[in-house]
Length: 265
Image (cartoon, rainbow, N blue to C red; front, side, top):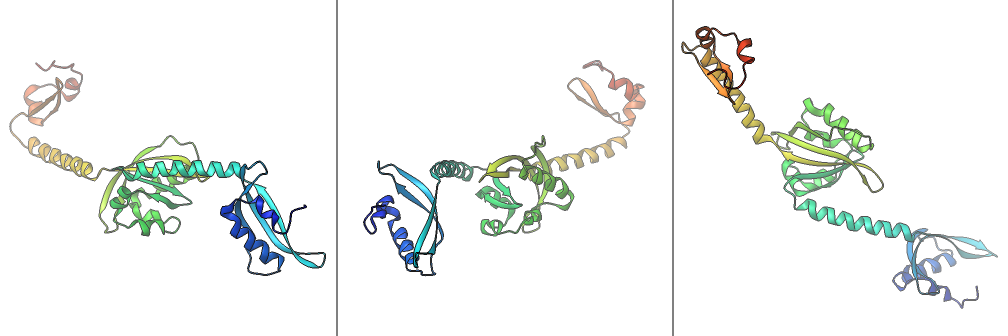
């Protein structure tokens, strides 16, 4: 308490002297345009530096304005925040190079989206990051919305859930329907649970599967109308035969299904 006028400034890191001097001066003069809360770095007598959260306001002390200051040390919190920032930067570098879509949902809004995720939707990153709560749901086909909403809710609340992988039909900005295989898990993001999403586009795979299904149906229609017996043998087993083959062979489908590999020979 025997500091000379402004001698208290030696308590602060030079980087923060300007704001400390400005705020201390304004509050001692009773001015109104002041900042009541800010974080600053201080210096101990030993030279060791530490962080404090500063709360200050003008009061009347012995008939004159004075600066009433309260400090809370936050050094450990600052170290934790720095580690978190470094880990987030590493995550973003990896995520931005991924061919898979990666996003983080918290409070029903996107907190992070990588380039691959943005490209798949047809929207811009700016649009998506500015969406209101639950507006992400426009990316999901109504048929699959209950499933997606429930999974997002569980992950955002940090609930234990074994459904980390599922398929759903999505909708791009231009209205095109796309198929997505999605992996999701609950993570801690800025101190609270969030849904970490990884998506893989399965549209071409679904189209191919549908085309195969349609071709199989066409094949069966033609085969069932044929006067010739038609068989399909796979892995040593008869996996298909048309009605004419049933009639010619005389064996029932139940009998054939019980055969062991190559027993048809």
